[in-house]
Length: 354
Image (tube, rainbow, N blue to C red; front, side):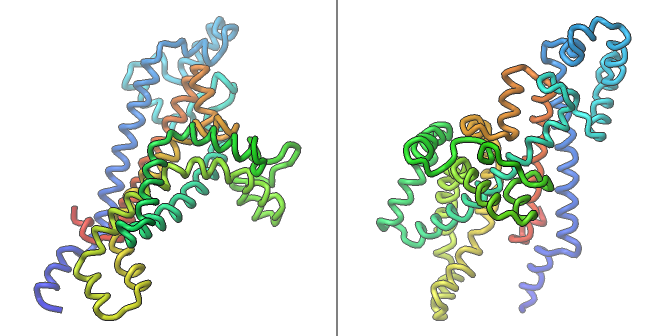
């Protein structure tokens, strides 16, 4: 290795550079989380509702002792900065308030509904990543050929069609007309769920060794997961195609082919690996699209997830539940983006010095 190459390598990978890179991202994560909690608190304060009557009910709201205890617990009788500090203290201890719809702690409600959405999102992202990246690579390698044109048109159609329309068509064709898939819920009527470990029926069924229940839970998952993945497959196909096309003409790719390496080795080890940083960045958007699209998909397929809970909370103006869902989604967003940043730094060392 030449002296210049050593200098460049030391600049790109300074001692402890990756640790400092992660630390900077963690500090940014903390400040971003505080900003999110502040925005959520302010929006909750601005909602024109009687928090005491909403949470305690009309009868309890007439009891001065109950009202005073409630205001003291949530700091409603304190100045704004003190109320925010109390709000943060409650968040640290997992207290998101009490839902006016279920009359239970919002934390408990979220713990019941999140696993269903997590399971749906997991299979949706897995399918979208495998199919979308695969289609993108194929389209780029067959640029301006019939395969490329078909995949580009299909990806454009997938991006253009709204998720709720795809869900309705899939439900009508797959369930009503053909009867290939169940229409709603996570299991067949009358079937008991597996012993709860993760809350995800397919995983819990596997852990319990119940293969029949696993197949049934997976059967219920397929249609909503495919619908939720439709937009993301199209998105990943287009982004992967563009990323591969940027890499495919580089000198090191031509050099690898000139060495006589097998085409499969050139594609996997040089082309796909070179395009991976851009694809990883898009995966953060894919996860965001899954969360935003889950509300409509869960409503149409009667899927008992966080989307259903958020919809019911919005319809009934359940402020604590809405705030809890908003905080959960925000935490997921910033966590996913943090993970994407770390993966990007692992794949491309140059970003660690930024």
